[in-house]
Image (cartoon, rainbow, N blue to C red; front, side, top):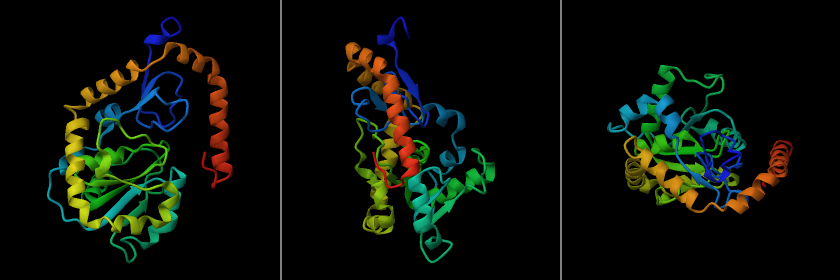
Length: 262
């Protein structure tokens, strides 16, 4: 990399991208120093290695849609904490027709056992919409699992940059600060769930399925490398320590002051 920096790029599914090199990230996010230097991908590598086989098994099954929307996951981000605080008690366990469930106690670590993985896929398939809030990173693998299962995603990730070259109008984008109004927003689109879900599945088959994923990654790499400016990259590398400190300060402010939105 030191000898041929202009030939190097980074491909990563890590939740906290560095932006040190021109990169293809699953958790790509809106940053002034990322413009023209980063492309967004899906979870090509981890999806193959750690994918939920039950999602693929149930993808073509006909399932009764018991829930208007659902989410099962860890409270790994501020938007998820707000989601649990505002909606969890009103869901299927209460009086609502949706299911929102925190898995922190049931799954204290990062891996789910076979029964939990199957239940996750069953609930996802039984939902008209799938809530896809950001986790530790701006993206979430459940976004692509929802598309595979023909479930329209509701994306709650303000800084996530959608994969380019795709018409994302099948998804509903909800700003993180509007979580308290989430139920009203989704219900306003209830009649559209089947059409949106069908388009989500078509998008998955065209861009993210195993037989298409490599071509999609190659297209992202091609777009990225065609726009790299070697002189500008050299300036970014020299300024990177300051950029890193700036990002670390922003993260600290986000923890100290929940209302802070950089």
